[in-house]
Length: 120
Image (tube, rainbow, N blue to C red; front, side, top):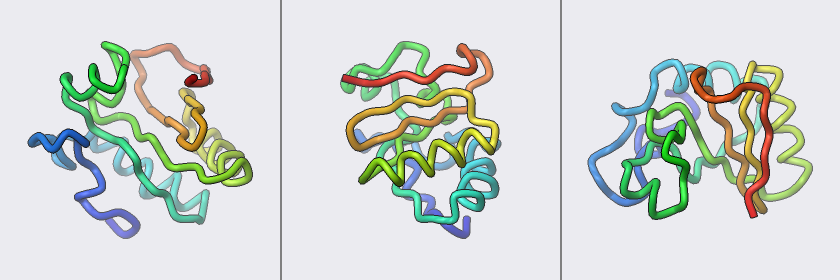
């Protein structure tokens, strides 16, 4: 990938899950669509997760992280967050979660669509 290294796509617990476990269409989407439209660096905080790590961080049982269809992206300020969300929506993202300094984007088609939520 041009803008990402394979080791950016891994479970943060250190298990065996990595880029090979990511959903290929999500990888193409984040590299060839989102990154191009945003035209700014993207710092990935969390992508693929094993079930144990997902539980540890309070993830939902049906989290798109488990299928490699999600990324939590570092958003250092509200301006970047606004640009990221605008780019994501322009690229067809219909599931967005907002935390203090992270924005969750996922492309699951089996989970509810056209939703945006906040984490506390």
